[in-house]
Image 1 (cartoon, rainbow, N blue to C red):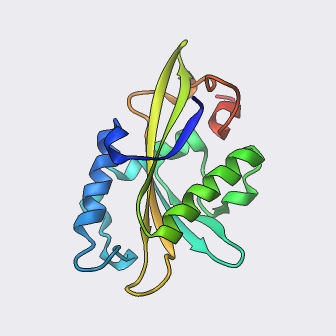
Image 2 (cartoon, helix red, strand yellow):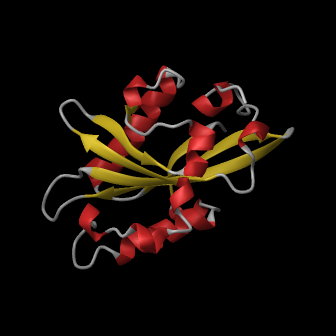
Length: 174
């Protein structure tokens, strides 16, 4: 297995992803999904280091990184102020898959989750993530919160995926 997209939340073995899911659901109120104005970073302090805030642009569909947490930046690089489709450190296949993951969350207006296997210190470890769409009431999704759980893993310990290069962290020199 390399990466599984759109897995059930019940298969996610990452507390921080479940925390963001519970927070996102608590902010819905009577709406199908919360909006950016419903989110309060002060209520998410434990999640912030692993959080991505992205803007969703349409026609053409693009993902723009507004903010990337400190721990996420250690694994992914500082993506703040960059479009996903312009990240040269990332393979074309990985960019397309990740864009499809964001598109699914945006179009279906629901959280989506993934599991990714990486080699860490000679063994395989699963990383879990989730994307949570945001929109003003009755409007298209314009932002997403995304989170990845890297556990206690150190960025320089991540060697490769079980079956080849997939995401950009394995291509970065540490």
